[in-house]
Amino acid sequence: MRFIIIGAGGIGSYYGTRLQQAGHEVLMVARGEHLARMQSDGLQVHHPEFVFHAPVTACCQQELMENYSAQDADLIILTLKASQTASVLHDLHDWLASTNTPLLSLQNGVDNEIQIAECVGRERTVGGLAVRIGGHIVQPGVVEATGPAQIIMGAWPRTDLNPALQQRLEVFASAFNAAGIPTRLTARIQHELWLKLLINNGVNPLSALTGLDTRTLTSHPVYGDTVYRLMQEAAAAAQADGEHLSQQEVDSMYQLICQFDAIKTSMLVDKEKDRPLETAAISGAVLRRCRQLGIPAPLTAMVDALLTTFPK
Image (cartoon, rainbow, N blue to C red):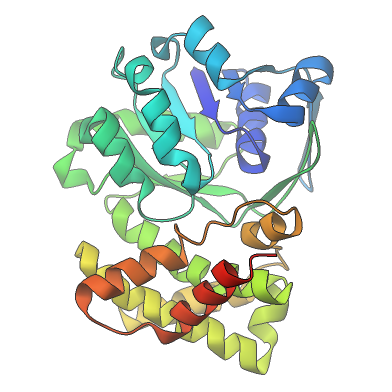
């Protein structure tokens, strides 16, 4: 099969090399020194259960539009930072309009699929989650990844509104699983996206503020309780999207993050590398919906304010 991965950083590079090693054609779209090193020296990916060092096909976004057609891909995968989604979709609008190729989002937050659907239509919009994976560029052309690196995906916002697309996804899920990427389809991807946002809102902003990994946060008597209450605020916000997250689901997600390996969150890595933080996609998404519902989210508001006021 043929895949185009747009935003091939830590997460995208890991999944892309898994697919390439399984025999699929993969085009990785990246930028800067990481792209230059991939083009000159190939790509290295180090994972406890997977090692890759080989040439890859990689280009920048402008080269993508000039030299490739969206019809060249069976599936386009977005692994961009959520803050880049709107601008990239705007730039690629005409390029994407030339085909009916579906777009899979493997990004943080619950707003990416909304933007994708506005660009290419709901019939091509696949919601997805990269679950229990840590993936970071440690130097240009070199990625370190950890965790089971699972994928959950489904026709957005749920299968009964897009059954034809869900049927197409069975082929991709089979290919992912055969490539060593544990993947399952869900009939309620929007609900799953909110379950992940519970975890992201619980640990990402707090880890960026404290400099602590997920295991240290959740095992701390004060920070651990704060993580749980941040997750409760995210669950309340989900009502704005018509999703009811039960107390049992909150507890289950909290137990899940407590059992994680000690993962350095993407927001903490971004802060350490002086890159823009995904606050708008995580805590910002919760706050916008809580304002819409007229309900308070004091802890989320506090960590968001701290990160936006003191980003360094």
